[in-house]
Amino acid sequence: MTIFEGPPVVIETAGGDGAAVGSGSTGAFNGTLDSLQIKYAGTAPAGTKLVVSIEDTIVAIVVLDITTATDVVHYPVKELESSAGSGLSFYERHRLAGRGLSYAVTLSNALADAITIIPTIEGA
Image 1 (cartoon, one colour):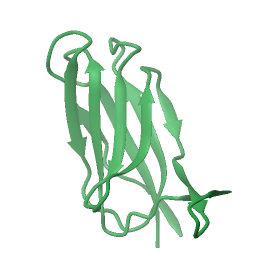
Image 2 (cartoon, one colour):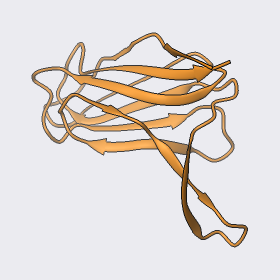
Image 3 (tube, one colour):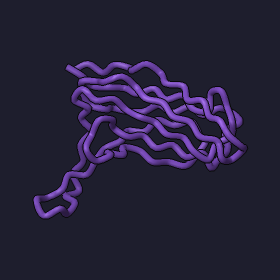
């Protein structure tokens, strides 16, 4: 398997200070989501909220929901469940299977480059 970096998505936010919003998305990926490198603008407020979801699913699959303004790399995983729906304490990465990622930013300031997100994907 090869791990590759997806194109960076720069999210611009608009609105009042502490209430600005923005969104962005990637193209489709075939592979497994390995990581998300997240870089915030130096003036983004600490309460900036970022939600990352997998696109084109019947039920929204949120892979990350954070409130911060600190640059970070996340390795999102999901917990496997038994047939009864209880957690098994085993984790796996999210398979994208021809789907992309969508990003939603809220509670930010109006910034041309509020957040830059770079996904890494493991693919065949």
